[in-house]
Length: 485
Image 1 (cartoon, rainbow, N blue to C red):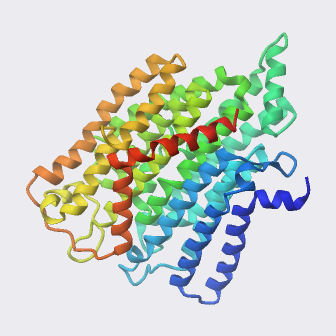
Image 2 (image 1 turned 180 degrees about the horizontal axis):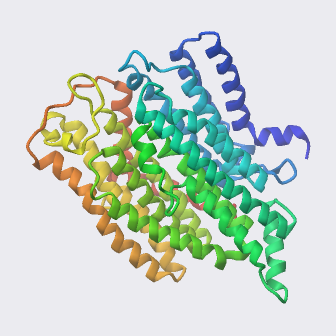
Image 3 (image 1 turned 30 degrees about the vertical axis):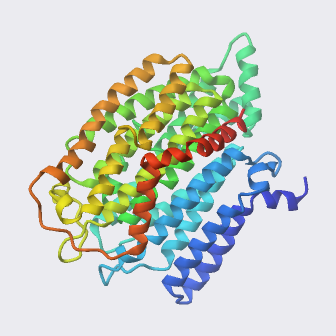
């Protein structure tokens, strides 16, 4: 295949890379942050439209290093939309202090992170996987500590960097073991090598088994799956809220897409081996995410544990190991992105009389009387995250449980359903605080048509009106899943 065809398949990454480099030069020469942000959002939307064509149907590029298929296109569309939202909501947040005004480097870092996430979604080789993941991570470390004069932000960036480096080392060690015992880094050839070992007299080698474990452990860090979740609450709390919004959405989709592709394409012949890891991570994430969130008093920490909990539910679909399970995972991630973006957009509305962000759950008391619109939207997102019908969060959980039951994992689905009841407690506690507690001091009115419009759109998508999108969403998710098998 000629390079023109290869480049056509990587068009989204090319658009974002070229734009990111150009805007970096503009930022270095004192360009306007407003214009840089607008152009960055335009680049993300352009990259989304460029997914139509070779980037979602081109096949394999660069001799097996990169795959352009419907699965990658589905994940990238979610990633680019979430990244654009993270840029759009940043200016008003950073304008609250003179020392930490939004710098033009912020949208540039988001663009480079999106390039890495795009590579993660399309990785068909362990080297591409690692390069994409590190590109995303390096930008994320800087974003976490973007408010240089804020101690919590600096601490969040340092913690993320140290623990992320450890996870990268674990992942790299796992990759080296897989390469050493299969002789290749290309996913499809790894699957062949594993099948050959399984068919031999000695069976799957212990070294390769350790390679599979370490590789999935490194990826588990990126999706905040237990027991590699320890960074999530601290980083989500300390990072600027627009950055936390970004972390809770786009990188989650990219890492989940990476895990699914690696499991199905790279290690599909070792399903019984990696399924045990996935089932443990799923159950542990669901239970810890539900229990640990109960005692939280900070809304961002609570949403951090909520993200851990939701990752566990998504992994139940992966444990099924079939096209239906993968389709359920992708549908779940699409609905999860809408719920998460909406919830964090509501958090951005929490500002005291002095204009400073407020994050205590107690400050939500009586918000239904002082800010009824925001309270109603936040209640919708909380009910949806809890999986209460008829909201879309219920449909997302139903899909993964249905896939698990159909694959014969009734016990796994039963435990997940029981744990979701536990998790519903802290979501309902927020709704109770807003609607039944005595009013706390009212939040400062926020006049932001961007945030208000995004909250409205997210609330509509996860409301019963969103069920109108079930057919096209299911079709797209099924098409994405089938492209892996």
